[in-house]
Length: 130
Image: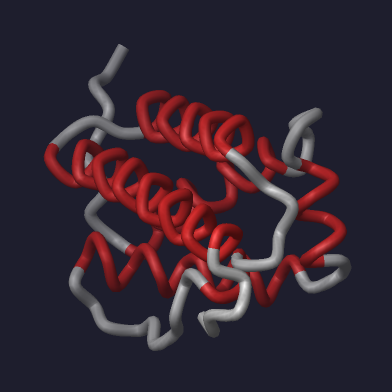
């Protein structure tokens, strides 16, 4: 069996994102939240995620959005973030190995922590604007 390669190209990013979101769409906890929000716009969402991770991991600056605001009003809490992170980590570990794979998991963990913190703040201070 050949060893896994690291995340080195847009092709790798697309494999990671496509595999991860296929799992999200079949997950008992997460599928409803994602499908209600994204509806029939999965191609657009996936393209945005390709560009996001391409920017973050490959330093090819193709993403220009703000990742938090679309999540601000979702009915999500710690269990959702834990499941999202578990699926992401498992996907990375099954497909890749190396520094960029480790960075992807680290960044996903930091993002989940930051999003949870921002959501807690907004829920405790509902008159603040995101």
